Image 1 (tube, rainbow, N blue to C red):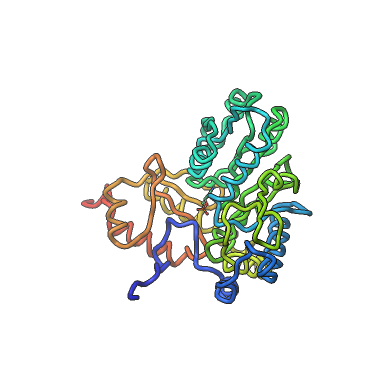
Image 2 (cartoon, rainbow, N blue to C red):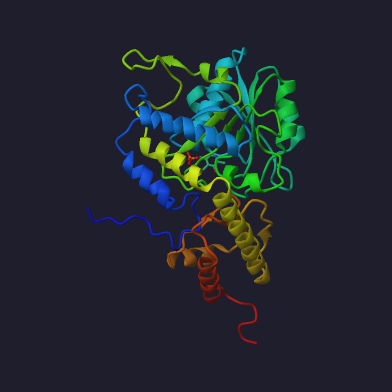
Length: 357
Ligand SMILES: *Cc1c(COP(=O)(O)O)cnc(C)c1O
């Protein structure tokens, strides 16, 4: 095998980052375990309980029920599945913001549900009036995003909880990326702040766990009963996960890194990311690019397509939003030195207005 894994020096587009050393070590040691079979792989199953308890601390839930999923996609599909399975309607719908991750499209497709897509306001959070209008007796769940994939915005979660309650629907919060930075902000986003029923939070993104480690949590254990199937050949009687055999590496790495980094290590990450986002946004504005003001540490800015392509040709892994802005995610590996080097390349490549003066 001659392939080399991705080097992170120029990766500005990813929501993943090299695993923390303790996560890497735990992942290697637990590579051959399967927490999907807890009767056989007892230690991996115990580590999963530990990981879920730690996730509960991160999201303000003292007695959490949940599991380590393959990622945010599986967690979102499962949350929507819970809502559908408990809905009384024969034609259920789910109301999501336009900023919702594309995994909700997959969920709606797999589960044969109607997805009602509520528009955003000028600050890229969901329009509450639209959510109210879209909800009806057939609404099984309302989704709020806490840290949107393109702009790092946080929907008004407490208000969405009220709307969900009024419609006897579940509130699912997607904090797949934002969950490990939000605890250090003033946002109201978690189980303690609002009537949140379920939440996605991915250790393999800002949590610095090895892939695959997503997280799904529920306030009430009964919600998982809506997913449980009998498991005839296993020692455990029921299984509520979507996958069968699962990665003990993801589970063990998530437990190990949260044990190590919650809360102080994650706070340091957040502060670095926040400061870098502010610095980078300023640097772009000084160069006359239109910048979407960062809330959580993701910076998007209007960069012309040809310049964007030249930066990609230099090896910079940058990505674009649906509106064609360049998007940079301030992951732990995106240090000030990395951003300095990027801005230096930007200055070298961009056509400047006063070049001949
Ligand atoms: C990344 C992301 C997802 C999908 O998670 P995967 O781990 O890639 O499956 C879902 N929602 C949000 C908000 C995300 O940022």
